Each structure stands twice: as C-alpha cells, then as structure tokens.
Amino acid sequence: MECPILPDFSADSSPPAQSPGAARRRLVLLISGRGSNMQALVEACRAEGWPADVAAVISSRPDAAGLDWARAQGIATQAVSHKDYPNREAFDAALAAAIEPHQPDYVLLAGFMRVLTPGFVARFAGRLVNIHPSLLPAFPGLHTHAQAIATGVRVHGCTVHFVTPLLDHGPIIAQGCVPVLADDTPEALAQRVLQVEHLAYPAAARWLAEGRVSLAADQRVDVAGNPSRLFMLESSR
Ligand code: GRF
Image (tube, rainbow, N blue to C red; front, side):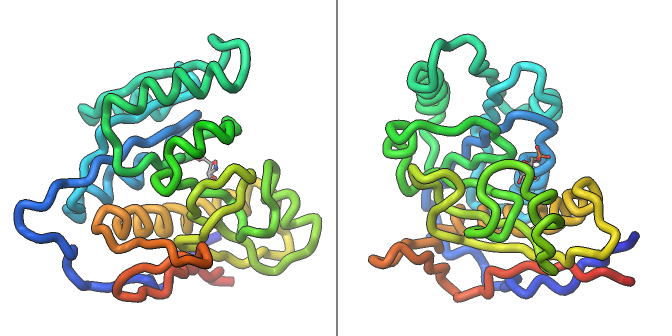
C-alpha cells in the first residue's frame, strides 16, 4: 500500500534564528535497536544544515544495528548495556556518565527502550526529548499499534515530547498522524507510523537546534514562528 506524504503542514521556510558566531547546539541520541529515527535525525541535520551537531549515539544494547550505521557516519558511538548493571539507578548513572562528556544541549531518545529513573530525568530536565509511537496521551507504554487496532481508533500516530518522570507523558512538541485501515496488522500500522515519525522528529529536533522551542508556565510548548507542529500521511486507498 502506498502512503503518499502530504505537504508538511509544519514546514516553515524561515531561516535558522541564529546570530553569527552563535554556538552550535550539541545533540546526543540514545537508541536501543535499528535506529531509523536516529538515522532520520542525522541525515536531516546534515542535509538541512541545522546549527547543530550529533555529538554521539549511545545505545543500551551493544548489538544495536543503529550503532554500526552511526559509526560508519563517523559519529562517536558507545554502548552502555543495561545488562551490566544491577538496577535502574546504576544503569542510569552509567548512562549519564557516558552522555555528560559530550556536553549535550539536548538528549534525544530515538527508539531507546529503557525506562529512565526520576533522577536521570531531573538531571536532564528540559533537555530530554522522546518519540513515542502513539498520539499521546492515548496508548502510553508498549504495543501501541496493537492497542490502536484493538480499540478501533481511526487515527494513530506518534508524539515528540519532553520527557517527565511519568512514562510517555510530557509537554508535546509535535505529533504525526496516520489513518488506521480496516485490514491493518500491528506491523503494517507500525510501518505507516514510522513514516510520519521520520517527519515529525527531525522537524522537532530542528526547532530545538534553532533555539525556537520554549515551555510556557502551564507546561505547554511554544515554537517560535508558530508552525502547526502536525504531520500527516494519508492512505491512497
Ligand atoms: C519507533 O517506533 C519509536 O517511536 C519507538 O521505537 C521505535 C524505534 O524505531 N520508541 P527505530 O529504532 O527508530 O527504527
């Protein structure tokens, strides 16, 4: 099935709001597996000339396919295996120790499959961003595509959000949506959602890199230039 990408309603052609000589922002990406979101972020950062650099890709699994891809791109990589630590606190301490030397402005979770401790989240508060494969607040946690099919929702998608101690919650930066089709399997739906993830996450990361994202007192996100922050696919059937 073809799912043509409709115009990016969040696209805005304004140039990066960077003054000459402004420091480039540093991004650290955390992965656990194939890393297609990480790849979309790296490629968009380079192709679109964001005022940012991917300083490192760190994986919770040494065998993550995404690590090989990042290494081949000349990006610093590291594995911090959760299996090497007795508990979440020890793992998160090791993870933070791996991240900190890269002095990130933002830590972007891109298919990072570990639940982070409140201490870790507090340490990187306001700099920690995740992509979740559902239209939050619907379907936090795992198996989101199966849940979407089981509950009969007609629209599903992804959410890019700041990470808070509550799992799969937090101020929303961008969302992407796709239709749920009558004969969808979780796998087919996941594949469709992934297409819109690869639009929404790079767009949100670019806004972060450009220094355009802020949090209002009510914890809602504001993006300078006021893009719609909604990405869509539409089935051709
Ligand atoms: C994505 O669907 C992401 O939203 C979820 O896990 C999946 C990771 O895919 N958290 P990839 O590793 O980015 O290809």
